[in-house]
Length: 297
Image 1 (cartoon, helix red, strand yellow):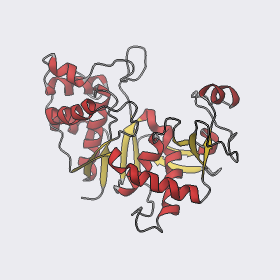
Image 2: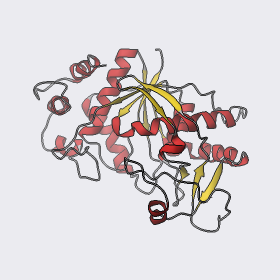
Image 3: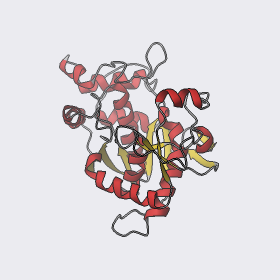
Image 4: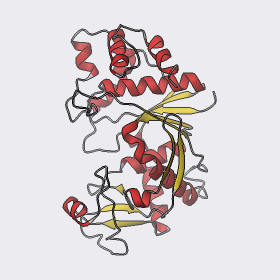
């Protein structure tokens, strides 16, 4: 094996066709580049994660025939996340932010994609006695990175979003923080995910570099020197209005499809057709479905 790739669903709802397409791309990349596959349950959002959703991820993947080499559940690493936070805090790289959602939207510029570009209002202010998130200090630096499908990008996270939260106001770890730590300690060498997360890449490169620089000297943390993964962001399945499928928009779950009598092969064929990878929604076994995507990589 030449590296490790991960499939990392969040257990905040049941898996749907969008997740299935992403899994197909991950398994196709593993086949093309001879990679180990790690299944990571990303339950950092403890306010929305549910055991029934975690159980269903395992059940759906087994029903569809996906095999993986290793697995982990993110919440088992929360003690490591806290230790990393402590190290960052010691270096003065983390600060509390008491800004409400309304303040964030009205007191900061908004990017073309509708994202708040935080201007650092709370940097240097001590308000730990109020409800607050914790933000990481990000350098004002352009990052050049390459996507295997979309080409080259030059992005500056400071200009994209500003200092971003690594723990939210409810005390839960954020996606950006959790994924960077886990990718580091799990030795992830290839990241294949949907286009909707593409704009997270530069900020994750920046944060991973900071975490590695601050923590590699502490043997107890076992944080390795950061080596930038290979990135590929795949196209999405969209609804008739052009919106991506999502749990919040009540996309039909794989579990519902199974209970309705749809076979795994029918579902695989339909997903590839919706993704415009095959000309017809003909049923396909898993290996054939993966092979269809390998030819596009």
